[in-house]
Image (cartoon, rainbow, N blue to C red; front, side, top):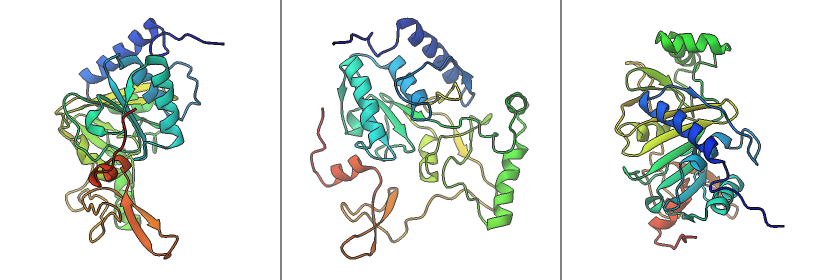
Length: 282
């Protein structure tokens, strides 16, 4: 039996409500805007927040790219891409520079984004203060009063215990000199890509019912201390075994043939493009 869906799955009223929340989030950078998160044909925690943003914004002329931890071919990326494509008929691509709308889990693409692109990040935990304050009412007050001493104390305790900040992913950032924000579980390597980005960055948490945003050309600074500055993951002396890249985020792998540790680009489409191999546009 053939089932006919409205364009982009949602009814028009639902899309308008999500767009209104998105516009408010863009107007107040880094501020978490509540929205009426819809039931989706995928489980909460598997990207429903990002998917709802994508479905509410996508148009017939858009070109969609979906990645999961740098891969276009993971189960999560393939299924989200299929749902959007089946209910919109839009073209999909694996080339970052071709996409107008990019939905991602845990990574920002290596290719610099442009003013004609929107990046949607999937977020499991949007509240950066939740690690030390369980109450939603209290975190709202802390944000309103710009009281972020707890966030600094959390980083200070890491330094005292481990002699460095240990937030390998989701390291908190200060947006527009106002709100401390969770950048989603992207590696520290990707945090600087948010600063003064030409592209609009939207972040959606379906389970937590929150939307927030980093508008184009917005100042985004990772929290740190003068004597313990924020540092990226170091891949000094290492390179991708396939394309030879040294200035990208690399995955550490074990070669099954030699049992040696090797490195490879986490962003698979970037690696293939560097090798001049066809990625394919669907």
